[in-house]
Length: 481
Image 1: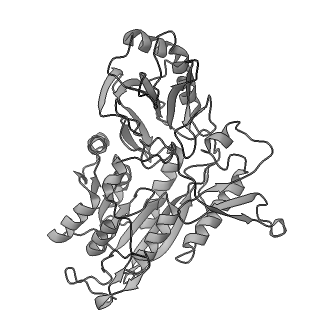
Image 2 (image 1 turned 90 degrees about the horizontal axis):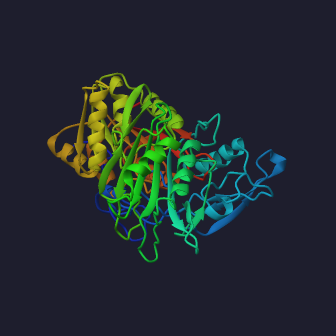
Image 3 (image 1 turned 60 degrees about the vertical axis):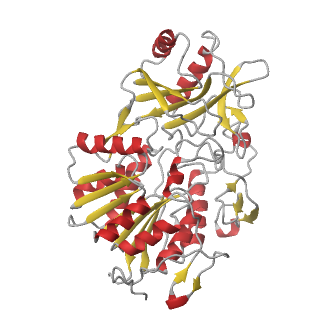
C-alpha cells in the first residue's frame, strides 16, 4: 500500500488521467484511472438530459437513449417474467412492455419507465441491477421502498407552450428531446401541484398571456415550478417569464389565490435567455415570503426557488436516517458534508457529532443552509461557499482532518480531482450517497484501490416507477476494523 509523502497516510495515491480509462500501475506503484475532468461546478450547469433529473433541479431535457441489451427473466425460477431491457454502462435504462398502461402518455414522455410493473417487481429489478454493478464490493441490502409509491414528487415542473392554433399547453419534455408532451396529471407528481398548473393554464387566455415558443424565442410564460412542503403543507408557485412584467399582475395573483387559497407564496422568475435552464437569475416575490419550509427528521428547512432539496420527502427522511445509522457516530467526530445543498444531511447529523463542516458551491443554497441551522438552534455546523474539491485540498494543506465525510455528488459521480483531495485528507469513514449506480460502481473501484473497503450498501427507492436508483454506501479505511 502506498504511503503518502504529505500526510503519511497509506493508500492516499493520486488518481491520474489515462487514455483508455483502465487501471494501470505506473512509477512507484501509483494507480491511475481516467475519470471525468468535470469539476463540482457542473452541479450549477445543465444539459438537455431529463426533466426529472433530480440532482440538478434546474434541468429541462431528458436522458439521451443508449444502446441496450435485452434480458428476459425466467418464470421457472420465480423471477419477474416481464421483458427487461437493460442499458450499457452509461445508462440505467430499463423498459417494460404492457398491454394496458396506467398512464396514457407514458410511452411518449418516457419519464416513468416502470409505471406498469408491480412495485415489488420494480424493486427486484433495481436490486438485481445494483447487485450486478457493486455486488463484488459488498452485499447489497434490502431496498427501502414506499408504502404508497404514487404522487411522491413534491417538486413539479411544467413546460408551457401552445398548439398550432395558439391554444396554451403544458407538460414535460419527451425523453431525449425538447418536444413537449401535454400532461394534465402525472402519477409521479403531487396532485395539488398538478391542479395548480392546470388552473394557471386555464387562466392564460383571459389574461392574454402568451406561452413561450422555443423555436422563435417569443412569448411570455416559459415554465411553472411548484414546490410543496409535504409535512408543512406549504406551497410555492414559481412563474418563469421572459420579462419581469406580468400583465394585470395583481388580478392574476388574486385569481390564482381564489382558486387555490392553499398557496403560501408566489414568485416571478425572469429567464430571457435561449437556454435549457429553467430558472433565470432575477426574482420578484408577488405574494408571501418567497420561500416555504418543510420538516425532515425533526429539523425545519427553508426551500427557496433555486435551492436543491430532495423531491421525495418521505424517502429523504428514511435515507438520511439510514445514512447516519450506518456511520456509527459516537459524538466525537469531525464531520465534513460535501455537496451540502441547504445543509440537510449536515444539520440532521449535527446532534450525533462534535462538529460539522458543510461545503456547497451554490450561493443561494448556502444562504438557506445558514438560515436553517440558526432556525433549528444548531451551533456546531459551519458553512462555506466553496468548491468541495478545492476546500478539501485546503483542509489537507492546513493540517485539518475529517473523521467522516458525507458526499452526495451529481449523477456523474465524484470527479478525479475530488477523489484525489479526499484520499489526501484520508478520513476514517466515507458515507457515499449516490443517484447513479454506474458512476458509483466506478468510484467504489477507485476507493478500494486507495485504502478503503466497502462495508455496507443500502438502496433507497427515491424515484419510484423510474429506472433511477439511490444508494447509501459506507466505506472505511482498510486499516480500521
